[in-house]
Image (cartoon, rainbow, N blue to C red):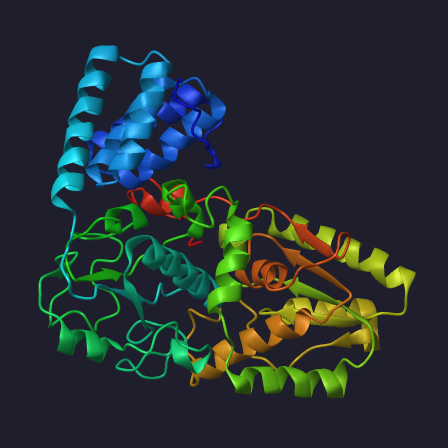
Length: 439
């Protein structure tokens, strides 16, 4: 029976030509950038499904990260599509032999428990939560115990030596970084992490040895402790799932919803604050909207146009019924615009807001935990709306869409869903993409 096609579900922005994507993949692979080469190979295959050479290179990426079953699958597909037969056939036989040796002798990293320390990504609140979810999927794939460490460098933690994630959600495991350091021995992976650096928030996150550490680099590490400090998306990991995994074949949104149901349990004080505000201010049917301003204009060139579309959608909804309007926004100017347009129908929380082009999460604040709680309360309040209008390129809007199963016609997202595919530009040299979207 001939090898079956390998499913490719990818979107990489700005690559609409298969040959261009393939040539870029080769170039980046030669430079040692396996993560970007992986993404671009998949984009080339998406655009040209019969591209055997792209499958062959994808097989080599899989081989180099120790994903031998995937490597065999990709090499077989490459040969079926007529890729360079002698070279690809040799690579396939070498991987099969390596896989047989692993099966014969076992691939036991050790009897000791393995851990993944999940550090803060250091950006917007829901972007950091999405990163945790990506890392939790990685833990499922690698059998590691998750240890969330939102300490130093986290924009929503008030203490550098304490995990701030637990201020907002139940921790995915009771293990702390202190527990890991007490139970394990070095070396850690990547090697930039030592007993002296492991509590720091930013150690070569963007440049230098061990920087831009994508999920595939962590798939088959032998070290007892691996550390993740760079954004890992669910979308980038999905193609690497074994066929037996319950999320195999899912799109990113479906997998994120499954991970949320399994792992994301808000703290009681957040839920209490949501219920209290809803009883006092949102006791009648309402529309919720998330209007994103401040620094988003730097990332999203069409933000003004998208905002105008969102206001048009709100106008239409508000004309149908006497809805109230719950406004989520980080920008005081957008709240004023909504108040001018809809008057007394507008309801908003007394959250911190800004009026310039610096995001609240990048501005210094006296109470970073409160800032995170305000974002959470707004998000969970929006789940009670009759309709939600939001920007698909922004974390709060996307989590409103993921945290509830919305009926058809009740969810109105404008723009591109940033969670449906990995962000290639995060994995490029900053000289190539200095203004890359931080997911």
